Amino acid sequence: MSLNYARYGKDNIRLYKVDKDEKSGIQSVVEMTVCILLEGDIDTSYTAADNSVVVATDTQKQTCYILAKQNPITPPELFASIVGTHFVETYKHIHAAHVKIIQHRWTRMTIDGKPHPHSFFRDGEEIRVVESVTRENQGIFLRSKIEKLLVLKSTGSAFYGFHRDEYTQLPETWDRILSTEVEAGWKWKTFSSLAEVKFVVPKFDEAWNAAREITLKTFATDSSASVQNTMYKMCEQILAAVPLVEAVDYSLPNKHYFEIDLSWHKGLKNTGKDATVFAPQSNPNGLIQCTVTRKGPKAKL
Ligand SMILES: O=c1[nH]c(=O)c2[nH]c(=O)[nH]c2[nH]1
Image (cartoon, rainbow, N blue to C red; front, top):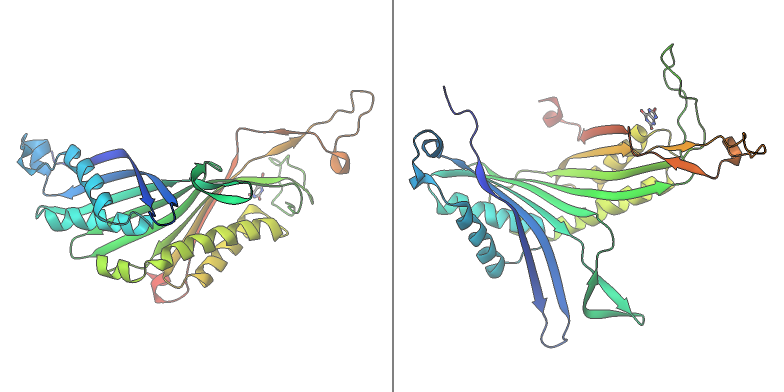
């Protein structure tokens, strides 16, 4: 027998950091959930009860807090790189660190038309995610994501011309409701070191803003022929907007809203052009995914 896969660490490390500007009295907060998984010469901890190679998961959690105190924790791409680099550089026998960060929303309140100095609210379940791998002698691999961004358009979406055969029941439609929970990811070029990540720090927020704006604008304004085509247009624009990104991916559930025929009740008209009351469906849902990369030698690999 041989140990085929071994990673261990701490998941669901909840972290909150406040920045207090003494002069203005303005405070800013960040809340995140961190997962750390380490890889390296740790097989004997599994196979021979050798705990000497184990950097305890509690130590990993404490390290996360200490690094959060000593460093900026935003953008999350930077903090993930700081944490990953720490473990790979501090422990000779640890060769890779997988650090995932989920950043939760705390949006500043506007009270009497003014931004409040220290009060925030959760304006939706949308999260900003970073998946990082810091690998000894190989560099830092980063993938940023938007998740759980729920959107709906009440018109401006069609779906017709699809393949038909004896299994097909779905009618064509030139006007439907389109709703999805956006999961969008973008993979960065490999960074050779933490210094290289630090060098491009403003790019991470810029990319997140661009990806979010492109997603929302394209969703709203595209006269959608299908989820497939609309998401491809989003990918193209993000690749054009962020040169350091090598690949963009989307995973979009198609959250269906069914028409309800109410003609049985006094001839009520509620189908086709007259449809106003719909039945939102929980399941099943379509699920449409794609990854788009740049043309060139890399794509041929
Ligand atoms: O945009 C869509 N893509 C599909 O592949 C599909 N399939 C389906 O039943 N409805 C839709 N809508």
